[in-house]
Image (cartoon, rainbow over all chains, first blue to last red; front, side, top):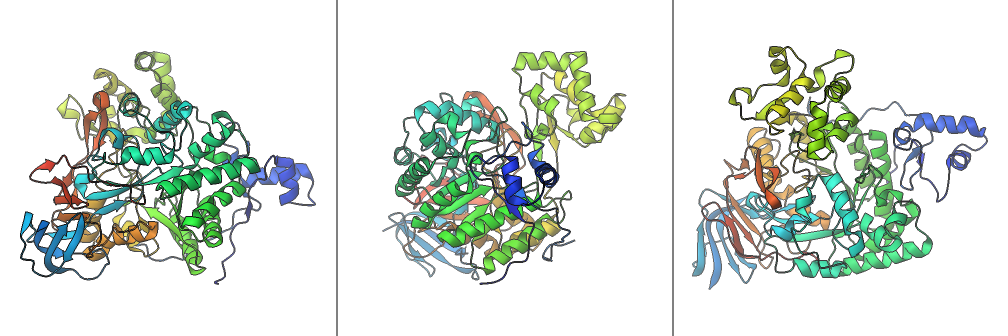
Length: 78
Length: 554
């Protein structure tokens, strides 16, 4: 089976998980407030919804900053 | 005796192999002979000299759910050569659904797919709850074939109740109940399951499917795996990183359960120029691993037409406008005429005096012919006002009857879209046919494929283009017995002129129930459409009374 290139890491919420619990799982060892603040910064898409920051079961939650990447596919024209 | 004999055609059989000349014989709803010279006799003969004879087109992303109940032909899709439609996309289907949940589902359809009340309310007798009864209701009623998806949102509502489905994770017992219910749907003929990660209901609250944790979708995918059926999702297409995460999730489900998956839409736009490239990189890697994650790409550029009668998709990023346009008509007219509200809307659209947002809008229909085709920027300048003010004033002048066009909002560069849709990893689809009917015409993407990317851009050969919307679609979806011209297969056939097939001009039409308005495009260059061996439409005779459509997997 072919290897995958590394992508921006993410997790999905566990049932009944809130931001503190998710922060502890995703960023173990970091102080809770700082970990939550990091997650907030990496997941602004969840904070522009109403109510801001509410977690849905299907959400994608990034646990690291965006990577600087460009597409390699060259099939498109100009 | 043959039922239909198509003579002298240029046969493009849906495999992608080179075209060849010959006749086609149809008998008992099936292709009796493909190729060679047939002597007949036949009850009906069609001279296809100079024309292409191809398998009927398959549209894998439609929302004809309600329309099929009052319009057997899904007009005008059928006359474009579409003989099979996949409906129930984006987590929304008319079954399985308890009667008490119908108002909620209708409200979601209205919000997400911009379907008017009249498309549901009194337009048809809603007599089913189970998927099997829904399939039974389609039998003998439709002129084209239907490959229905079961929607994840109604599935949740059935098991958890309407309120709980939009509130929390499902319990293990509820997940097992959903698995059983999905199994019933697949047994009855569902082609798969659809879910959505982006859609919102009439209160702008996430739809039920978005409350499902991965364990739930994994459990449902396991049931799909028992039947080898499709999982369709709507990802967060406006964000590349999230789309890539969805590609990886789908790939895991595909590998774990041995199912095909598809996500739609995948757009190209100047706002996210790396989007397509990055997503296709990842899709390619996942295919290399053996996963099946098909990105659906539409052929047409993104154009939005609207008038202020409805809260168009065009205003979704302008809450002040969107909420005003959602008001009942009398209140809306009063609000637009109120100086304070009017100025608030103008300020919202033109913050800091930046008038660019509406300047490009063109007047497409007006009682004042001198306005048609002109953009709001120049009209506003002439009137010493701003484009947003001109939009309101022109609309009020004609009792909201003026139509505007926002053209080329994305996905519009043929030099990029042509190679994209020719890519082997790309599934041509995402037409959204039957939805957003008051924002743009979702019909004719197949004609546009030939006119823009075969004849004009030469990005695909004729055979390749036909394969992309026939044999390949049937293969990706596991739709049996269709998509190819091969002896013994179902006789879904379209005859068209390869030099003229195209989509017609977009125009408003008042052909919905209760005289409701939608945008449509008629077919160009299509001669004959045959479904299961019966003539359903011809350029000479128009639509027939035949209702030969079947549920494709039932």
